[in-house]
Amino acid sequence: MIKFLNPSYVFKLSGKLLSLFKAVLLPIVVVGLIFSLFLSPKDYIQGDTVRIMYIHVPSAWISLLSFAAISFFCILNFLFKLKNVTLIYKSLAPIGLTFNIIAIVTGSIWGQPTWGTWWAWDARLTSMLILMFFYIAFIFSYKFINNSDRSIKACTLISVLGLINLVIIKYSVEWWSTLHQPSSISLTRETTVHFSMLIPLGLMLFALIMYVAVIFLMKYRIETIRIKRKGIRKL
Image 1 (cartoon, rainbow, N blue to C red):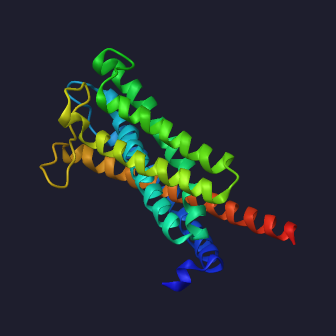
Image 2: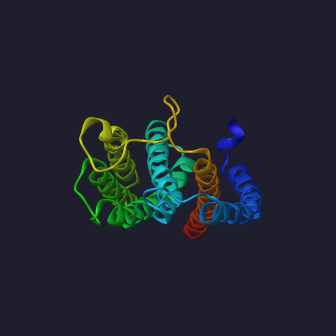
Image 3: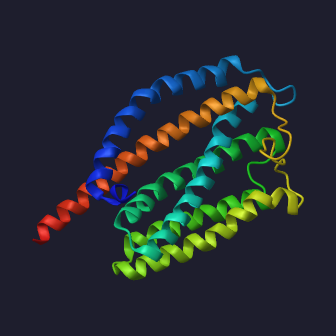
């Protein structure tokens, strides 16, 4: 366990994982797109519009999971002051924000033909928009607060408050009457998505997770090199 806290070991491990993920990324993306665009059936009501789901849903999930992971690492860093952990959440935050924006934009594109409007101020959409501002505030906190301790405290506070918003996003369709449909995929209840659509959705989720892993590892390695060079210049 101790070696995983060693920056040199983690840097070498990240290089090996990056090579592996790069090798499998393109084939997974190609297979996922083939299933999503050509092999999956049309929806009997929405037609081909439903194919937006294969980008929208995984993007929303990744956005939520990224912020949950950021919150976990912020709390860990606040308690134990681990430098590697700081690099992790700094590398993950821009990725989570990007997928949050993708989820909002694709949801708007999907909503126009489905609901007849590009945007509605219902609970799910509004809470996803609020999540975007949590991401922005978080990124600003570690970029523009020069004092390390204050930056860590600010990031931790924002991430903890953001966790409350994650709960609101999750249960918004159950607590309020919204345009957004209830969750069709659940680990505790019956999944209502047909198998023919569930397979491409799973493939696209896996493809986007691999993409996130590649971008995250590249960002992590760049941040590590930047910090090392900064330390050398100070000597």
